[in-house]
Length: 88
Image (cartoon, rainbow, N blue to C red; front, side, top):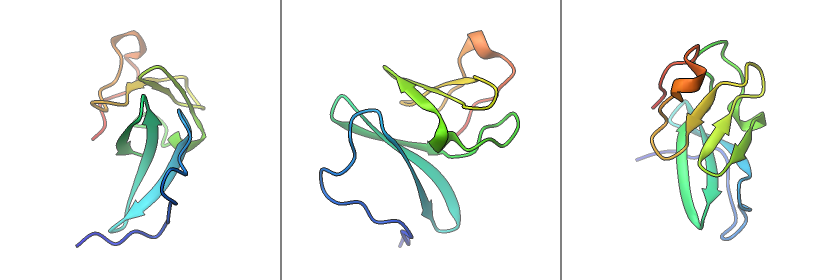
C-alpha cells in the first residue's frame, strides 16, 4: 500500500498548481488541470531539476531550469524540447 508523506485537503489543489508528493520513496509532481488530477515523475530527465517549481500551460509542464516541456497527461517529452527525455 502506498505511503503518502504529503497530505492534501479535498479541493485544495488549485488549477495548474504543482505539488510534490513522496510515495514509497518516489517523488511525484501532481497537478489539477481541467478538474482532473495528473501525476508524473517530479525530477526533470535532463538536469534533475525540481518540476514542482515549474509552470503548467494547458497540458504542458515546463521545467524551471532548462525549459524542457512535458505533456502532463502522458509524461512524454515534447518534440520541440528534444533535450529532455520522457518521464513516467
